[in-house]
Amino acid sequence: MSKPVKMTALWVENYRKPGLSPSDTESGLRLYVAKSGRKSWVRFYRHHGKLVKQTLPYMSLADARLRVAKDRNLQSQGIDPIQHARAQKQAAIEKAEGTLAAIVKTYLDLTASKLRSRHQYEGVLKRHVLPRLGERQVASLKRSEIVAALDKVESESGPSAADMALAVLSTVLSWHEKRSDTFRSPIIKGMRRVNASERARDRILSDDELRAVWNAASDERIGLYGRVVRFMILTGARRTEAAGLRHSEIETVRDNGSNIVVWRLPAARSKSKREVVKPLSRAAIATVDDVPRIGDCVFVFSLNGNRAMSMNRQGAKELLDQLAEVADWRLHDLRRVFRSLLSRCRVPFEIAERLLGHATPLLAKTYDRHSHLPAMLEAVEKVAAEVARIVAGEREGKVIRLR
Image 1 (spheres, rainbow, N blue to C red):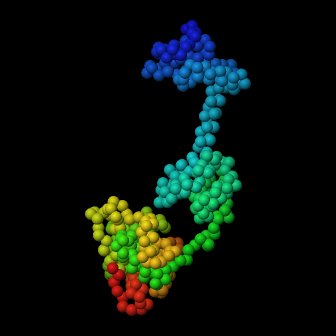
Image 2 (cartoon, rainbow, N blue to C red; image 1 turned 90 degrees about the horizontal axis):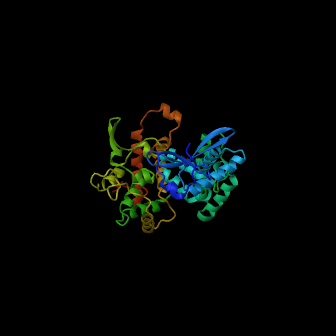
Image 3 (cartoon, one colour; image 1 turned 90 degrees about the vertical axis):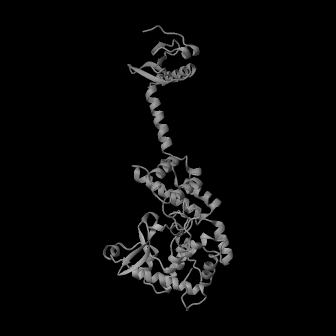
């Protein structure tokens, strides 16, 4: 073994010989130089009579000597410095990986990435949940802490925002609970701020309001937004489903000896996550045909030919309300209008529910394999005729084509 040397910072910087250097007379440290020139520190010590080799990352001589002094203090207490360092590293990893922020990130990467609502979930978590609870360890997260955080959300953004934050957080914690042996979600029933029955909307447009909205939707200042509104009135579609309509989703099928133009909404775009096929009335088809196609754009309603029309256009909605002189209504209320018109036209319940794309009971879905397309087509034509009479200002009268 080579004779120990009193190392200096300059000696350490200039040492280049591959392999282990002589040991430092002050700390017992030895410098290891790899063939690549990379340096690290090596120290030998005994623990419970066994010779142990300790390797440390390269640092300044002063920092290395300080580290040795701390390790010798641990040894004097009967603690192995290597095992202590490993335990500290593991604890840091567990602490970082056990925070709500870490759980949320894993959830978004593994599960929510497959959901259409990922961006909505992510937005709610970033705005209302993570700033208040993100650094908390999930294992020790208390119900009182969640309630306090929701109180803050409610005071700043209202009870509906607090309930949305609660719903998203509950989803994340329930997901984590299924993956853990010990964790139990602190969220229980009864923590919502607003009852679902109180939140449910029952707003429907009267005939006069429907006429006003229909006519205002044709104003050139409303533009393509108004076309989508009319299409929603005639089909009962949700706004994202209607605005995202693709040319490829409209097709002609043969049923019972007749050609029927249908809208085949794929499962990927359907809220029920299953394909929905429903006929389009002549008025709905005319609404689509009247929209100029931009090049080879796949979307029917598009402003630039690259992506679907967005219905989150507050300015367009406010202008539509102003022109129609109708207040306190939402686009989703048009779906309720369509369903009510189906009942007014005495359309059977089963056909009406199919047109809205609602889930069919399992037993009926298993045994009833009839397409019902002719009956559904008759129903949408009845609704289109009823809308035509309303737009014309008549309860009964001559049916006009809606263009």
